[in-house]
Image 1: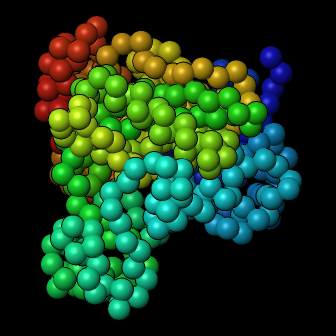
Image 2: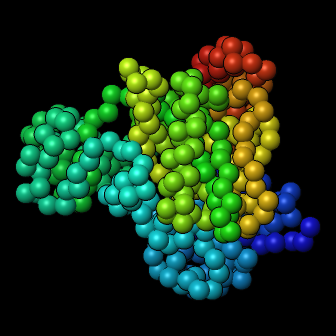
Length: 372
């Protein structure tokens, strides 16, 4: 197999894990990342420079293709690479996914269901907005919100006005409150020649707006994964995806018509925290899937071969996971990101594998107690 080169915009933990998955495929990875202590520096060629640095961008332009680990890539960087090297996913898709209003409108155009929403760009548009989405909602900034940041729950016009001012009076999306049964996610990958493959449907639990636990298989009604795949394929093809994209869903309670509906909550044009369990569940990981999709290599669905779960390790002041207990718990594998400790920062995760779903549940209860 000939050596290939892959450029990545960003050098955090996702780039680190993408690079580790690329090495066995004889793919050399180059990352452009201004942080001198970037996690990816340990396993990839690290260009320690701003994302708009001309020399660094020239290095990426010499690669076979470029991908990314975060969506808020400076437009100037994408413009500098345009026409010189394939960037996958492309600039148009990134422009949608990093802007909540454009993202939700584009999801509707792809016939994907979402919660009711209204775009608010000025103070007069606050009037009557909450009633239009059902009387309760979540106000989210259109840009730069992640892990629960840049959003506020509101249940009155007064709270809506206060929240909009607190968020800086910037363009926002007001989403109607959704009474969901569980949150699930599914990744889809698409090669430049249109081949599509899917990751597993994963069940997610959040804490303080940050993903805490992901579990496979998801405890969902029959037919839910097929629905998620249909929706993911429709979005991927309508948006012209090249690379990998993760869709997060709300699964609504089951009703007289059968299994609960799925509403797309958010889209990430990259590997996702909820897919980390694919590293150790057997088979292809989400990171290998993204590398394969971006470079046009053979690609198949990447379903874990065993029940598995992931628990995030997020920095907590004055607390540390019980590492000896974690190591002693059967089926665990620790993944640390080599990042300085900071409260609320993702510092690593622990994957857990078991022979069956009941054993996984029992071990997961023990693991949860060992990670603050």
